[in-house]
Structures are given as C-alpha cells and as structure tokens.
Length: 89
Image (cartoon, rainbow, N blue to C red):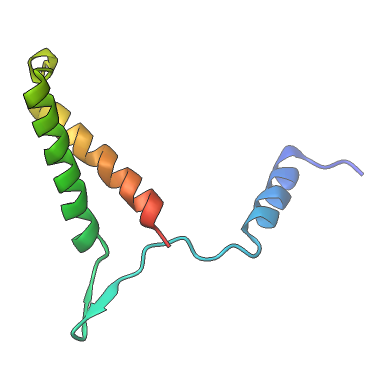
C-alpha cells in the first residue's frame, strides 16, 4: 500500500488531536459580564516586565541596551506569551 506524505501526516495529526482537550483560552464571567482572559494575563505580564526593567536598572545593565523602548516591548511580549502558554487551559 503506497501512502503519500500528506496522508501519513494527516493520520499523525488526527491521532495527536484525538482525545486532547480544547487548549483555547476561554472568557471569564464576572458579575454576569464576559471578560477576555487577557484582562488578567496582561497586567501580570506588565508587572513581570516592570520588575525586569527595575532589576536591570539597579544592576546597571540597562545602559547596554541599545533601544530601550523596543527591549521593553519585547520583554513584555515574551512574558505574555509565556504566561498564556503556562496558564492556558
């Protein structure tokens, strides 16, 4: 029996997805109103990014960063991605 690469790939992906729970983030209900889970996750990432910024400042490492604003945005995005990955359902 000759299988093509795509048939084999489709079988593997179907096998991996069978039985897996839904890995999406779901909205939260607070007082009957629905909120995005990012309402909680974004401030958490912001706090971590701010703590990192302060640590770099007090250690004197901030002067080695070429574009500080872009660095701050990149750190925030990395923290947000890590938090969504870790706390995702």
